Length: 215
Image 1 (cartoon, rainbow, N blue to C red):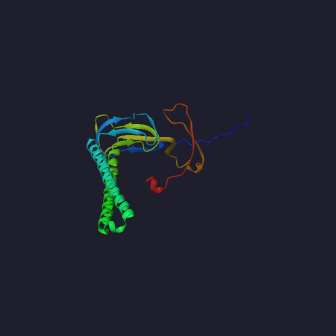
Image 2 (cartoon, rainbow, N blue to C red; image 1 turned 180 degrees about the horizontal axis):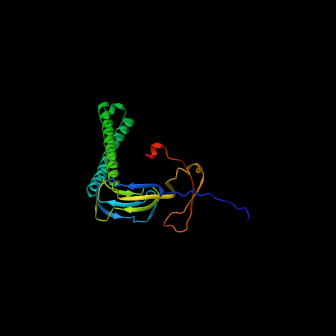
Image 3 (tube, helix red, strand yellow; image 1 turned 60 degrees about the horizontal axis):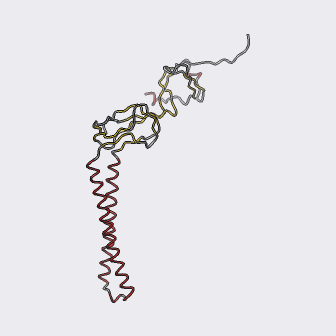
């Protein structure tokens, strides 16, 4: 007989869960025209998962782009006109040009600049709508569910993908009341999950749920 380390074990039953599970909803409903992610894929935050067809909004985006070009051209013309008046004043003095004409030229520049700013804002807004047709991964993880199918219609009522962040796992488990005094926060925990063979996972007991959480 010789002394040897003795480890007291407390059997528990619970569910092994990822630290974070995220449902990805499409921001824009429509027909799925491109699917980049498959079940079991590992993705990084920002990776494209799928795209939704946005023909109407894409047309509006092209129109908004033309609107910006026209507004910038009008602003350039107004600024060049004002520069010519400045040159006339510099060469011939204020008497060569009435104050009213010069002020009108300044007003035209300010108006054209305002129109350009409005066109830029319109372009930004429609580009945001178009970008909403692209679904991206909100976090790193594994694709555990795919509901978006090529050619199918999607909306914001149901998630198109589920992504699980398994960089850390947690176990939601119950301990028998008789064994509870033996369990302390920070205590080492070894788990042998079902379906994982002889693999042993190690972790730490984090905390006991509050009465409100238990409900």
